[in-house]
Length: 232
Image (cartoon, rainbow, N blue to C red):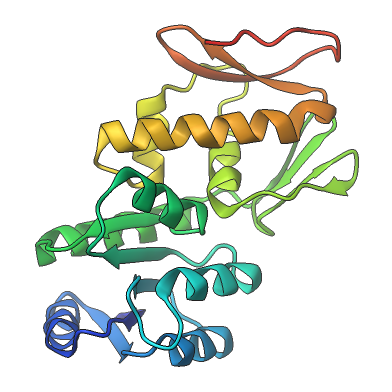
């Protein structure tokens, strides 16, 4: 059965080439070249994966992404952009993208990244997990601290899910990069440090701590409220 894919790309030549290539790779592709229209279609239709260009007319891709994430937090979304700097990558990931591909790119790489996103979305555990006063609902893509919803970005939530899947085990930065879908270790590591820093502050009242294990990675564990974090 074909995978339903939504493509938003304002370059008509590239959009046509992508639609042809992805159709040959067994994707059922719907395509538009307008950001406002893309948002309306995504909010009112179901897709298994989305490829979203950042430079769309009428509404840029990041704004589309932020709006979609409010309603469909678990929908796999890959963004395309001609901007390839660290700040641009972090902005895209913070907006809620699951992966990031800079132009120009090879069609085979795009297809491989999409297959990886689909695999992760299908194997994601659907149980509710708790540590201390922190509760994570993987199916609902929500987290609570003392029954109060946590305000987490899509990327922060993903990092938390990875750490919660490895309670009391060290998770390397490279492991997290791999789960997030980034193939650029330098950019991925920088972004992860930002996400972990933000998570630490938000998880502080929950009775859990993300410890930095020097030279290895991060460890999520239950800690007494007075315990000191090991920074590094």
